[in-house]
Length: 131
Image (cartoon, rainbow, N blue to C red; front, top):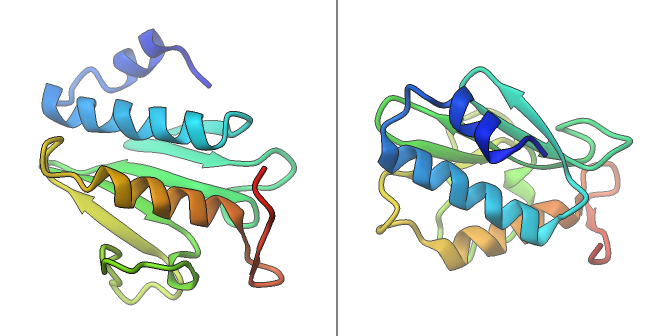
């Protein structure tokens, strides 16, 4: 993973309240999947396991919008979402959670979604054992 300094430099134009969300999501991914590969994108971050890319070995992605952050899952249609947090915009299996503020974010649900998607195998459509 990139250093916090690099992260802050990359997102220097973000309002502090959105950067706080990005950093906390990044911390969750690091706890859940410490071996995750991190890719920096123009408006976000993508996490996946080595030996695969964001789709076949995807954990999640963080995309920053003007006024919120999206936590997205390339195979989100296939993971449990008991509290109905995932939004479907008609993009096949892609789903996301819109996070508008740190204090209103459903952190426990976000953790559960990341954990579930990190274990999902899109080829067999089954869940891998915990890594």
